[in-house]
Image (cartoon, rainbow, N blue to C red; front, side, top):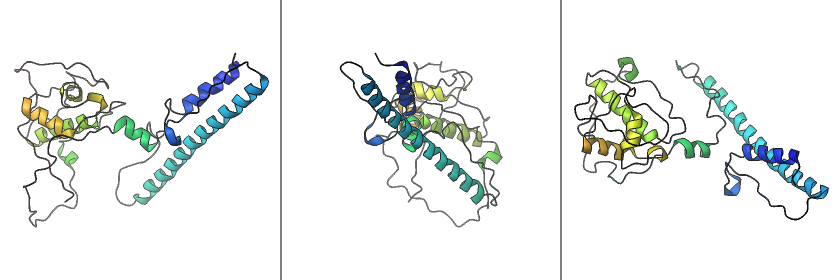
Length: 248
């Protein structure tokens, strides 16, 4: 029988490692070993040393990452302090995550099977005077930032945000539209397990689905069954879209 103190140390080690295993000592790595035969003080001491070392490694790795984050925050807060920046950098609910963990949880956008950009369309930018500063938020056509929690639906938030602003720029009321509707109903995507903004736009354009208000179809942070609304139900739809690669 494994002593109680050793069992608690094993639990702590597993919690510190992120609850999953991977090779190469990356994020979420944990030490696993199997003990067979009769329990003895020597075996208890050996197991304790292994678990202690694993826990120490997990703690030091997490501590070093938080310390690196703090240094980065100090640099960002000091480097842009004289540029009229309103951004303030500090610890938040994401600070304990390693980059690969953050990407695995939140950045699950998948490539689209549709052509990404029109190959034969080119636009020339005329030489017009541009304002030094332009912010669509000053025009009241951008909704507040929303928290996707642990749902990998960044693609849906992007599409809904674009539709909200496009409708507002056209003179319609600025509304918080339903991200959950896109997550549940966009059949060419994978809900909270990832998706493509172009697939979602193509779905909206092809089906002419009306996005309802967020209050009518609230965000649940998980993929659920699609809720359908009658054709007469009020909402916002799109009539065509274009995607351009501004990196060229």
